[in-house]
Length: 209
Image (cartoon, rainbow, N blue to C red; front, side, top):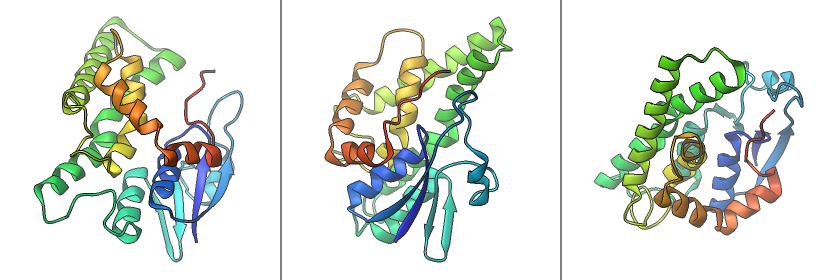
């Protein structure tokens, strides 16, 4: 059985959500954040030297990085679900969006989080962060303008990987929330698998403090 090392209110929620979508059984090993620092506990370093989550163990395979885990689960256990046919152009677009979540979109989110919670903000840095937040928010919103999903009319692993980041982007970027992103998030959060993942691993929404 797949074992998931899950940190509350973290990227590892994506893995629980996908496992629920695929109907795969899994064992949950839960970790709580330090109530003062909101950092992961040192116990996570026993399974990932970086002290980060998610981590999965599947037999002899141990993987970190949510994008890699999502790709692995869909290729190895998905049975053709939650990804386009690898022989199609849609699969290439799916791979782009799958890696975009952490490769490009997460950087302005993390910069914004660090300067607002740890200090060190300057007017030029704030202007650059805001520009990047808006740029990425609008890029995602444009891809969702037709009311579908990132790649076609049904959700894929790319939607699972990007939802967490897009929600943070839409909340942090200057201006009003983006209707296309909010509609997409509403549809994703209404899925039974999303609700089941919350039942197992808790609400992924970040608390400040």
